[in-house]
Amino acid sequence: MELNIYKTDGTKSRKKVTLSDDIFTIEPNETLVYEDVRSFLSNKRQGTAKTKGRTEVRGGGRKAYRQKGTGNARRGTIRSPLLIGGGTVFGPKPRDYKVKLTKKMRRLARKSALTYKAQDEAIFVVENFSFDEPKTKKMSEILEALKISDKKVLLLLPEKNDNILKSGKNIPNLKILEAGKPSTYEIMEANYLLIQQDSLPLLEGSLGSKAQEETA
Image 1 (cartoon, rainbow, N blue to C red):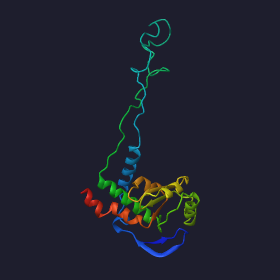
Image 2: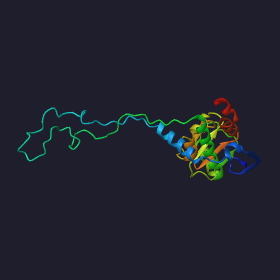
Image 3: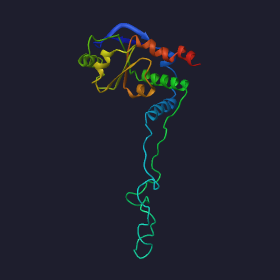
């Protein structure tokens, strides 16, 4: 698959780039995309929610009132879940929500997510750019020139660039990551992928044959 390389002013340059068929044109695995997204969200949960059962709440050491003559039920403790201030029935307890997937499964899920974006024509490859100093206005102008300023955008950089990171920090719909770090969730959450030209080989390298050899 060939894509035009855009300039920062929104116009197409004369250069084109070829996307790897092994990553951007595979048969997507929808189930693995779902599982990887679920894993990403589950692994962010702290799992610290806790409520007290009837054995943990305060009070109830003595019988609340006499057995007969009150017209009430024969209640033995005020810690009953039926009363205000009583224990909770089947309340949450601290637990581990982590969902584990193999490296091969995660890699296929990310490839599938990138294939979906390629099918939706939601990938822009842009010439490398940087700023001498953080400027939110300059970053906004690039997004407006590409007509994606009102969409959720994931920008992939070849390496960490503080000026670009700070320039996009106050743009609510923009997320900036290094090329080898986006998760399936972050790819699918974005409406468009904005990939700097030098980022593409790094993205493909993190998912291609080299990555397979390292994890074999």
